[in-house]
Image 1 (cartoon, rainbow, N blue to C red):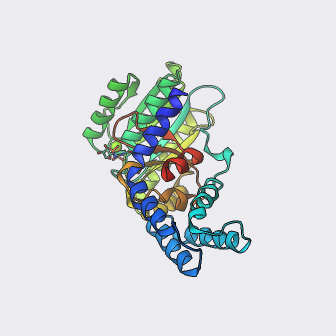
Image 2: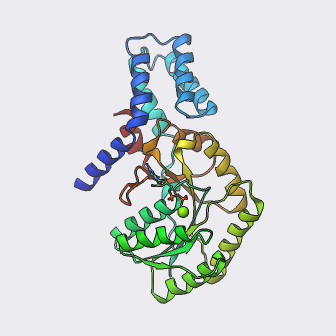
Length: 305
Ligand SMILES: Nc1nc2c(ncn2[C@@H]2O[C@H](COP(=O)(O)OP(=O)(O)O)[C@@H](O)[C@H]2O)c(=O)[nH]1
Ligand SMILES: [Mg+2]
């Protein structure tokens, strides 16, 4: 229970910017108003501004209108509770859990554009899995910049997990060694940090495919997860990134970073409705503890709190 309370506190602190912007204006828009066309128009526009996406905003508007026609709700104030329940229903239970290997190390590949938060998110996952009692190894496969390896090494020391980094510039070679090391050290989890790449850079996208192929040749069934890190502050562009990355590598889920740094947390809803990928984790700060599995119930409660 103490753990859960801490989760909700962290979450609502992390979502405070979105809440202040969005929920604050939503409440003042709706309170004491009669539900009519004008109000529905204003609401739709507000949902789009919170980055929920045009499609989601239209759907929510339509459902709200229907509820009004059916006399399930009559006034603006009731619309808030309706919205909460409506948004919570978007996420099926099944698709958010992490797929673990049935034997041997579970390999999690982490990808995304430059600066989206990959390395930090790898550290967060390492900490989380370690807290669950798992043995974690990191692979420093961002060989583009020496600083990248250094950054991950510092995280590994702080958290107290193993790290495998190579001397050369070939990420495939690092991953090759890391797979061997993970098996030899009986690791439960191997987290692979990769270099940032733009979804428009074909050669770099191919390199990512190569990394994946190395992993799958070394460890049967791997990678068990391919997490795409998206920076929540980039808004709708994140949707495009999700589309193109999933064409190049079979992305299995999204790590939505920097939700604390944006007033547009509604992007979670847009991702749900526009990309067929589950958000599995959210990043809500810069320390390794600032991570939560995405839980729609808690997310919506924190958003509307
Ligand atoms: N506020 C906030 N900052 C984050 C979060 N995740 C990453 N960052 C910051 O984003 C910047 C880039 O992160 P980094 O992990 O190096 O990105 P990478 O280039 O994709 O590996 C750093 O300053 C991080 O501290 C988050 O969830 N919240
Ligand atoms: Mg990095």
